[in-house]
Length: 237
Image (cartoon, rainbow, N blue to C red; front, side, top):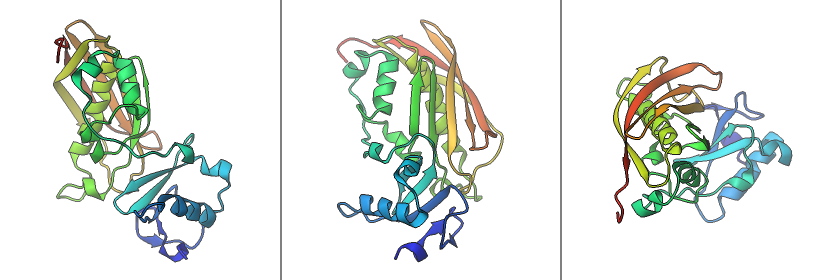
C-alpha cells in the first residue's frame, strides 16, 4: 500500500525495503486519528519491533512525517507543541532553569519563533542547553542552501536560553549583541543538527555565552558568542 510511495532520505529516491539512511518521510494524513495508523505503517514497512521503534523520532513537516533515528525517543512521548508567549508575571515567579525546562517539557508554550525550526529532544541544566532541529527546503535562501537566519535562530536561542537557566526568579535578560561564524553550509540533506549553548559568565548586570551547531557526525557547522543585559523584571508586569 504505502510501500511504493515511500520517499527516502529526502532525495526523492523510492525505496521498496529498509531505507538506506536514518532520514525518511512518508505521506501523512491530517484527519483525526491519521497520525497513529501512519506510524504503525512505518513500523510494519521497516520491520521495527516496539523496542526498536522507541529509537525513532517522528516530526511532522508540511504534509509528511519525517522520521529521524534518535536514541531515547518514545512514540508515547509524541504530543502537539503549543506555541505562545508566557505572561511576564508567570515567568518572573520561576527560576530561569525551571522556566526553560517547563518550555522544553511542554508545560509552558514554546516561543512562536521556534515554529520555524521545530526543536526537539531538548534538555536544560544550569548554564547549559541542548536541542535538535532538522534543516529543510523551507529554510533555503535564493542561492540554494539553508539561510543563515536558520543558524542564527538556533544559536541565539541556545545562548539566550543558557543564560536564562542561570538566572534567579525575578530576573530577565535581553541580547545586546551576538556574533556568528558560519563554518559549513547546510542543505535539506544535512539531517538533524545539534545546538548547544553554554554560559561563559553571568553577573548581576551582564552575561556572556557561546553556542555551536554540529551535525550527526559531530562536525562543526556554525558557532557564536553573545553578550546579554541582565535586569530585574519590574513587579506588576
